[in-house]
Amino acid sequence: MSTSLRLSALLATALLVACGSSDEDPEPQPKPQPKPAQGFDLSKLKNAEAKPLVLDGRAVIAAGQPGSASYELARGFRQKDAEEPGLLATAGSLDNLHAVAWGAAHAGVVQADVLSDPRLGSLRQQVEFAQGICQAEVYVVTKPGAKLLELAGKKIGVGPAGSGNAITAENLLWAGGVYDCSLVQGELSAQLDAVAAGELAAVIAVGGQPLTAMIGRSDVAALSLDAELVTKLAELDGDYGKASIAKDHGGPADTVGVSLVLIAAKGFDRASLSWTKEGVSHPKAAEASEDVDAAGLETREGPAFVLRDPALALRLAGGSEDAYAAAAGALKRAWEAGDAKVELVPTAGALDNLALVAAGQAELALVPEDVLREALTRPQTAPLLARVRVLAPLFSQAIYLVQPEGGELSDAASLRRKELALGAACSGLNVSARRLLRQMRVLPEHYTGYLAGPKDAWFRLGAPEGGQVAIDLGEPAGYVAAAGGGVTTRVHLICRRDLPADQAAALVSALYAQRKNLSGVDERFGQLDPEQLGELPEKVTLHPGAAQAQEAGLEPDSADPWN
Image 1 (cartoon, rainbow, N blue to C red):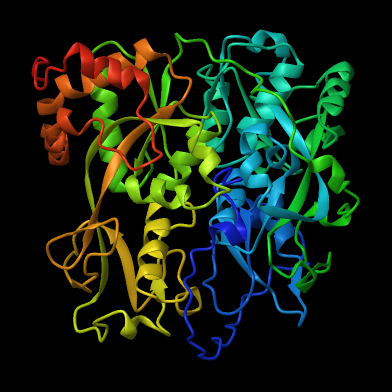
Image 2 (image 1 turned 90 degrees about the vertical axis):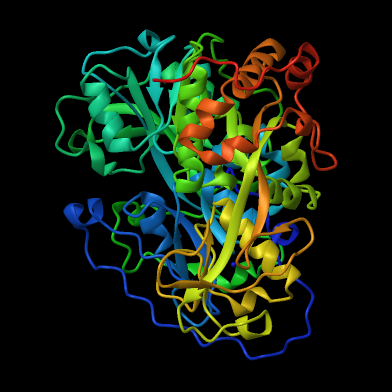
């Protein structure tokens, strides 16, 4: 020589899951990468598909959603030999920060306000500012004629979990004096439809013109922001400035812009990446500039800006992987049987879940114990767990490394020089796979697959399916051997540290009371054991409300049967 954040995510050398090995095999030879399309075609941009690349000796850039400004601009980076780096598709800035922090990417495109968010300071310390790219416009999309102050106390869409939109929305709403809003995550196009239908009051998203989902719509419009509000935001954080949205893209509207920047993992040769406007099929390429003050990207001091009303629904980050999504759905049903309001947040998996709770974007989440242990081993990521508490251990989750029937792999040594799929960059499976490979002394250079694609072998949650056979993983430290060659780790229900004790106690009591009902949906819930409530990894803390519920006496299986 960047946040999506990953948020979630969390930080380079400190998070790289490599082991010390003397293996000196030559690096794999680079594979050809498709060239980006020439010219600017909105229809192609809107319908672009993710084609994430595997590690093959090139740098990997966490780029955001295909079709977004960050993804298209990331196409302009080149390595010293003019080779195109691999692009890793993510939900956005929070994911990108976490991908760099956890070693799933060498660099990432991140909104500057995500990078300087006080809740993510421990991550910020582990990545390096590489260069500025451009300014992206912030869209506040409402029904035509609406006003910003009318959003107080309403539901506001902020696009997918893992993007930086929620952090931008918090800052903007605070600056505008708009309080007690509920920030709702989901697919952006669907949320715009929900605004048109009156189900959401607004959507706040960082677009970087064009926000393709807005093109051609007349039922929603970008809200023009008062100049005083824009000035107040600019004073709050130097990464904001004045911007405007064109008529063809949902305006005309005056708004605020936020800088897009490239971050890199500490220790990565930033000079090996350079940016060129040539061949980048996005209008922002013509505006791109490296003139972003790195000094202005230091972590801000102060608390989160927008406080949620306690009466609003609790947000439960369950993941979109079947292994966690089904369990999250069962928990939602159990708590709502007792009149609690629960909002499910779909994510890439357990690492996203941890990131969202640590960043205050969810109150509850499902996270496996090995992900918590991995975060604790890193001085830079351990501070994230200071924002998290455990409500209860839930059940064991099996992890297998599988190959097609008749495959040649048999042990750790046979894994070298093979292509292994590790799961999505911000999933817990990716963290688990890298942790297991480190214990098996298989270097990162010897596996290549972060996302889907034909591979020699791949990690999966749950037992092998038809046409698959497991490779014996033994019993690595911190895991329990599972039948058929896999391993298991416990899944914990975690929560925000500041969740009120009485609310936490009520959730825990309901959890055990509903055990029989829960296990009818997901048999793993039959493992719920009140005696294990305090059995946690060292330095992982039980929420005081959970201890309060335990002291008051838990009554497993006491809830009425579900219909």
